[in-house]
Image: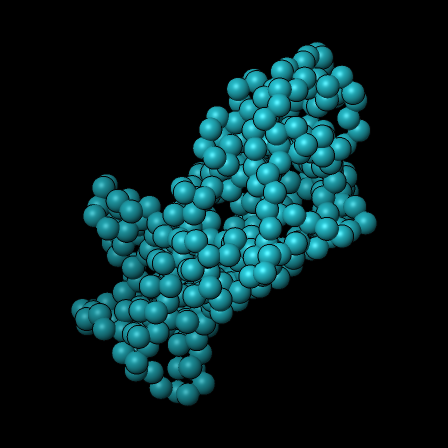
Length: 385
């Protein structure tokens, strides 16, 4: 269910973004001739009034064609008064920023639903989420591509771990510590499912993790992390949550969006400034860079899907990230269109858009490259639970 919700959520994010542009433009009398999900060849379309709606073959976004938004477009004289380029500055601003704003509205709605239904994530003194012994998600494969031990042993999301080799486990961290030293061994794990106690014999797999001493990652003479092989179970825990009241929900939502904005700005900045380093890391460089900032495609988002509350939270974070990305004042992003409109307002003249074409080309190439890196990583170096 989580995967389906994630995919529907990503599609909804694109549709709402473009719908916000469309509604804003139509409310100001601008003429929108096309509204499509995807790019490339048409798969299906229908015309209603003056607008053609449809779906195209490459599902990597969408667009609304508002006449006059392309400065090189020739517009019939009778439609000139309905173009984007002849609109007042504030109307242009609303049209181009409506898509950006829609992401923060969607993120707020998603977080309100999460906090109202499941509460706020509980954290320890270090600010880290407190895991429970309830399994939230099952990894289908091991890091080496074999079937996960949890799948082979029949574990399911919602199972509550109880014992390890007959000895009760008090926390998820204790459970992980016991698994870590038994890689390759067959161990007996007790759990509760729907109120009934059960046990399963599990042959643990292996995974690599950085060696940590005194909270510091150990590195070799080249400065690269030193890895050790430890046992692998193949599941992620549910997180402890605290119930919230109405006022607390509003505060938690505002705080969550603020934190997501900070993380998004940092991640984008790190990705842009360290782009060459990131590109090298994708194809065999330092794994440490990917641990810090890693492109994720819809394939990776589908892998991150788990319990409904986790999926909705991830969708909220994705919305904030995409909103921040679109607000960057570089053509042809929404923020770039706003910057052009602001320039026109301040300078009193229309800029030569042709001079922005090299910038637009760099932005498009960057976005496509990052997207392809995300797809490559999600296929060949998938995130592991």
